[in-house]
Image (tube, rainbow, N blue to C red; front, side, top):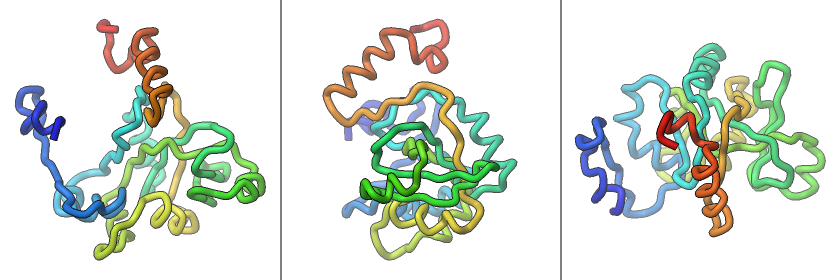
Length: 189
């Protein structure tokens, strides 16, 4: 409601904003199915979780996504003990994707790569999402697609912060103050 009240249809900031309201939460993949008519008629689309702050260069990531003919390209960063575990081959193809792995599964995977909760997706990805039930991209879709050969990882080259606590919110504010987000606001930070 706050976003809709502030931005409206987007005309005040030079964009067109469409909203998709969920009476029942559909999950990150289910929300895409609800917006399928809009997304299927487009080029690759960006899924960016609302609690993630990043200045990643998405043009580079999009070029990589297209070059690989990926169903989905996941922005990855290195972090021990995260809520995902991603194994890559030499071509940045994801060969294993674990969501909410146990400590034993993380240790067995022996990979520093984790999902950054930012994805570029081909409209074709929507065909792999169940349409009648709430579901999650990492847990219900990416885990299954790791064996498809069309799920790729792209390493984070910018700043990223998941704003999921008061401490992380303070960190994000400090990043803005320190100028670590200059690429988003050239000449303004």
